[in-house]
Image 1 (cartoon, protein in one colour):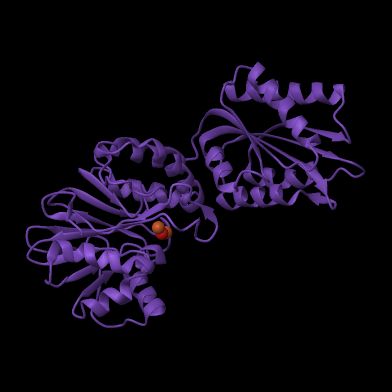
Image 2 (cartoon, helix red, strand yellow):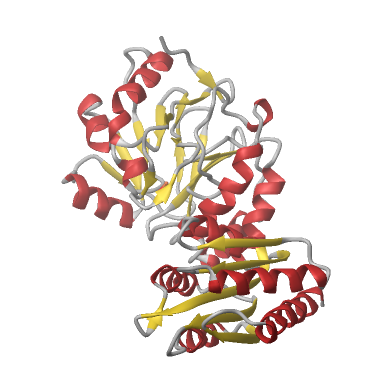
Amino acid sequence: MYRPIHITESIYYVGVNDRRKTLFENQLPLPYGISYNAYLIKDEKIALVDTVDVCFFDSFLKKIEAVIGTKKVDYLIVNHMEPDHAGSIRLIRERYPDIQIAGNSKTIEMINGYFGITDNLKEVKDGTILELGKHKLSFTLTPMVHWPETMMTYDATEKILFSGDAFGCFGALDGGVIDRTMNLDKFWSEMRRYYACIVGKYGVPVQNALAKLQGVEIDYICSTHGPVWKEQIEKVVNSYSRWSRYEAETGVVIAYGTMYGNTEQMAEAIAEGIVAGGIKNVVLHDVSKTDASFILSDIFHYTGLVLGSPTYMNELFPGVESLLRKIEVRQVKNRVFASFGSFTWAGVSVKRIAPVIEGLKWEVVGSVEEKQALRQEKYNECFSLGMDIAGKIRC
Ligand code: FEO
């Protein structure tokens, strides 16, 4: 029923796919599902690197047994304690009672907190070596990529980096595990969306982690989500490097709320101006239709953002307010910005947006407000605003 899935001769993939969950962390849509990756290193000692969501424990165990039969697992290495990976720790300990669980001091505290496990734990630090026989594992603490305890494990023998969430992406694995065997089309945009939503707040910690990896020879990156990277290592590391510095491609996201289409008409006029100004990459999102995770992904992708909102109950339209808060939380840097809004009797929305953008220190090009329906004069202002944005981001 299960066959061993090799990464190399002695390292195996034992992860699982989840195509039933609709919302990751009960909030982020999963149109292509998600994989929870775990790995088994077979040597004189056998080490399991991370576990999977507890709902998939049965399949997970069968995959382990397909590799090692009735032998026992000696070590469980816990790179990350979020329950999509750590969820099966308790059951693994029950199945392999002598297993030693390796993690850093913060991991060990969480293992106690989540599972009440206090015995047979091995604390590792930056640079600690764990010898399995031929394989020598070392550990690199990478706090806040994505939680405080996150770390990476490096197998110097086969030059494999077990990277935790880093370099991961949404999207289940449809039969293949290593990038060179798969059509990767769906993963690139899902990797950016994953970064923007999960890791996007932690640009500096990601930079610190990348600095620690400088000079390390890596033949495979085994992340906890998505493909094992072999041929695309340079691309994924460069992507993380750019995103963590909030570098983006030339283009503009226009995100807006609209109740009856008036604010949307302004968005269209601004978009026309941006394209007339020579920018091809323009993406419009109605915040009531497009989940914020996809909008955030585009905000990480492009240099410009234009945000529009009707005034609603003397405040921002709720979907716009929520998006703005998500941007603020992530402290996205270095964007060119403009805003627009419409109202019937009291114009508030543009005023509510301004202080948040000031806090982010973005370059503000301008704003347009319309009372009631869009008239020619305001259409022209919107178009001109679009042209001005295009001029700024072309520079
Ligand atoms: Fe995939 Fe932060 O857990």
